[in-house]
Image 1: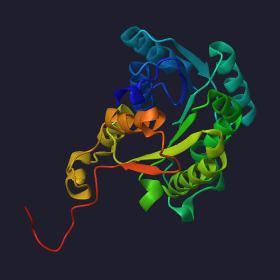
Image 2 (image 1 turned 135 degrees about the vertical axis):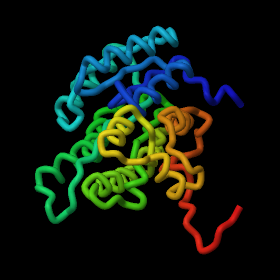
Image 3 (image 1 turned 90 degrees about the vertical axis):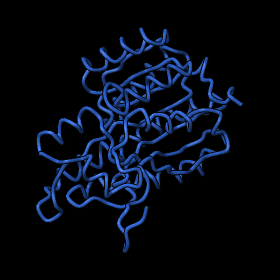
Length: 262
């Protein structure tokens, strides 16, 4: 059964792979035996992550600085990955970020920016990668959505809408590409204590641990590594009969009720 978690001989591309959840996913993919291509706009963070992961795991890790909201740049990036490794088996569409504004004050450019990064980029990467994932014979795409795409988050409306769209893209892509043995799934993290998130909480004075005690059944924020475990599972043969699904990694349902319970 454990053979289903072995990724030796496979090549994975992780967008937004230099920090946070993306770096945790990349690290675990490498620990399971995959060689890696990491992509993001900031080359410095990518190089640091690649060096750390390569040294820790002994896997080959190559970086590509690319703007995944630019479809032509994505085409060049995918071609370069395949030229470098000779194949592509796993695509993790992780790049994403939220802007903050209510709808009534949101400039249209802010909406466009959030949709471009959180939805369009996943389509561009998947569209460019699909011929190679089909050729793999067991290709896998995992899209990183958000709990905001399930329940919505006021003040992050464009991000919420884009992440919800990403979940439907996942379902339809799974329908269309399943006959080529390419699986497409989605993970929706909740409150996750990435370095970036913790810096933001400190800056705004937001008590994330306190909020989590009432917001989630497990009463704490998650970690990037916990999200990575779910993502890598869906990328492995252990999930060979799972496609078109969105898995929430969000600490469970809220704890608000009518009476106190144990």
